[in-house]
Image 1 (spheres, helix red, strand yellow):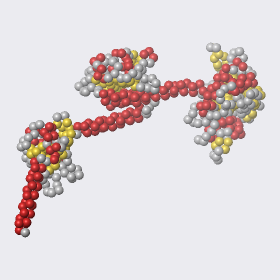
Image 2 (cartoon, one colour; image 1 turned 90 degrees about the vertical axis):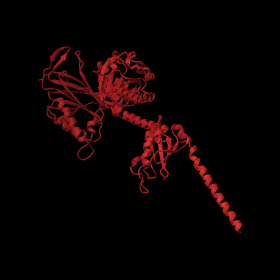
Image 3 (cartoon, helix red, strand yellow; image 1 turned 180 degrees about the horizontal axis):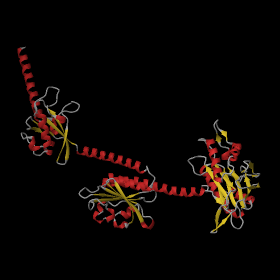
Amino acid sequence: MAGHDARATLMTVFEDESNRSRETAEARNPWWRGSPHPAVVADREGGVVEFNAAAADLFPRLGVGKGLDEAVPRWLADAHRRLARPARAPTGAGPAGAGPTAASPTGAGPAPLRGSHDGRLLRAHPTESGHGDVAWWLVDDSDLTAAQDALRTERERHAILAEASTQLLASLNPDRCLEKAALLAADHLGDAALVISPPGMRNRSTVVTAMAGGFERAQLTLDPAAVPGLAEALQGFPPVPARWIDPAELPSWAVPQGFGGTPGSVAITPLPGHGVPAGALVLLRRGGQRAFDTSEEHFARLFAARAGAALSAARLYAEQAHVTRALIAELLPPRLHHVDGVDFAGGYRTSRDTERIGGDFYDVHPGTDDGRDTLAVLGDVCGKGLDAAVLTGRIRSTVQALLPLAGDHQDVLRLLNGALLTARHTRFATLVLASVRRTGGRVRLRLTSAGHPRPLVLRATGEVEEADTGGTLVGALPVVTSRSATVDLSPGETCLLYTDGITEARGGPLGPAMFGEDRLRSALSECVGLPAEAVVERVQMIAGDWVGDGPHDDMAVVAITAPHTTHLSAVNGRTRGRYTA
């Protein structure tokens, strides 16, 4: 039994020795020696204790026993000195005086630090052994940092493009858009920027030059061939690489005053528009700075695409606004005045205050020396807004073409009815025609209504009469019928033509009551002796107050007044007088 115990004891001792030998061998060849990441172990004094093959490749001067100062970058040696040399703090506290690099924000150990070596960006993670040694694990962060930098740059550029889109599209004025594009490009893309519009009349271009928050505008006759790549950009061709452009070849107008000498780099890119080029963008960078690289040229093209779209939209809007103004000017009722010794005045209010044109209209066509009377026309087209206004323009043009036949109202209405029936639309209209002639101190009117409210006549006594005329709609039936009435006006008396938008206007103090013909007659009776313009203003004011802010139809009114005084009018360059009794 004693021998058995002795053998067991010897086996235990043998196994213990074997284990210690194996642990010693593993300590001499630790697993981290084969790691792809560089690792260096240094003692409290900064002497190198161990390192792996990756560390030897990164720091060829490493050697056991050497100081870190001799083999590794200074930032790493200083960090080791701060971490290993201070007196040990109580358990749970970081190294005294280590600062932000000595302990991680989470309290899990010393925080990593970053530094560069041989063109690489390294991240060093320290691990303390508890015996004064510190192991430094190094990770190459160059690719990660480059990716982070690229991501940050892209985010900044995205923000710039978003801001540019917002500011460029905030104005539909082409001049303001040119200026804003140049200012944004100078702020974010280069030291100075030029935005050049395509050549226009007389081969002149608008050039906006921006630098340091200011800009200048000029109209220049340019030779695009004088600037390499500019002619191609103005025609919308892909940009010429910046490295192909010699800044020394730029003409004087392309370099703003105060720029500070010849540019060091130039980039030119087209401003693409809607179907046609919107211009060109020229970017300048001062000498002594790096040239525009491929990434910056690509970013300039992205900016130019937004600027070109905004410029093209602004120009398209300006062209459409010009056409709209020209068309509206033709569709708006004319301003009426004295014609052949008779006072004419008109007023018009569309169904919506935001619109300028609608379905009501009026015109006054002066008479001629061959005996043709002055013709006043007031009408109301079925419908509202632009569609109705288009038909009013057609009717007005047709009536003007029929002026030689204006002596026969029925003939004019017949021909106008035929023209409307053959049109593509299905709208109809009501009309009232008034042929006006002054004889001595009196004014004679021949009135013909075609489905329209009858004209009202204000006498000098304040009495309001209704003209005995009537007829059928125009443009609704194959045949239009009508009957005419003749009315004589003494000095101060007025004939009022109006559309049903006046009498059918709803409002009033007690709710949506119709204005009605009785209120119109009452308002007109208060205008005895007033000139035509005052009569119109009075009627419009009362009807407008009745409607208030409520919805209403188009409202038009024309007053024809026999004046109290003599008016002079020019005929064929001569002045002739009309006597009023």
